[in-house]
Image (cartoon, rainbow, N blue to C red; front, side):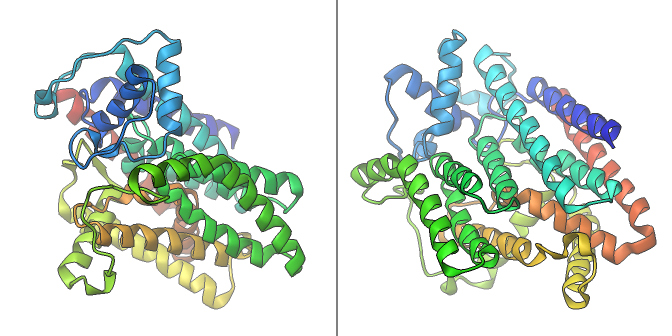
Length: 404
């Protein structure tokens, strides 16, 4: 088990390092707008104001990742680097220290994320080392997640916090664990707005795990008070500048009546979310696979996994995941549902599958458990082939970037 753990983590980190040096400047999703935010903190010594145009449109994001990154650059003596709009259209590799160091930070954070996932699957697949390895490999080599975990973006820290929150929710309810849950919930709020969705998930989990109403109230108030203590300044600043406690794409027109959306809008969001969840690279995910691979490979295996989970619910089988199965399904449904709702509300939004990644540990567990239940004696063979295919897709994209 430990040998395979080392092999998977080493290969995953090596792949990401390969992308660090092969992907041209700013050719990861919104990489320059995220870097612009960091550089503004360095040069102006204050948080920038968001505008609905390039490159200021990411400046509404909560500040923790950007302050942390700016601090890293300042401590390591980084200097301002020139930006040319042409670099978004044609590949350029400046090998700038700033870009390389920030991408390396992303890889380090994704490495820590893998460690926490391993701690989670150890608790879930007890006595099933093969499923632990496959689940870890799925998480490590999922192409779009690889794309998301070497670039300059607050997603890498958001995804790590999501994994830590899941890890803490699976632990026993104690004062120490609830304090940590409040701490990381608060940090999540000042990293990325989508982590606010963890609050209804936490509430539902506490209701299910608390022995009585008093225990639930104590845990919830402790978590809430610590989270607010950490995030209150962020809410007040947003209200003062943007007129709302949670600023999301300020200046961009929104339509809050999701139910007025037609079939084309819903189809676009579901389609884009699906293919970009599985395999997409590039500044606007222009590096992708043939549509038939998504339709006739990833879609069927997704249905197989979903069928397995439905079968698990109906027949109460697979004891290793049964205890927390309801919670996991609710958590994933809430997070994916909110992400799809967000994409429908903001017409300008491209509805990327990366929005699901804060709950990727739960998606990974459910996916692997679903395959195991459905495929039975073919589970090992199919799982190995599937993981190998993910690695080969990663290598394909890596070669494309090297040659571009």
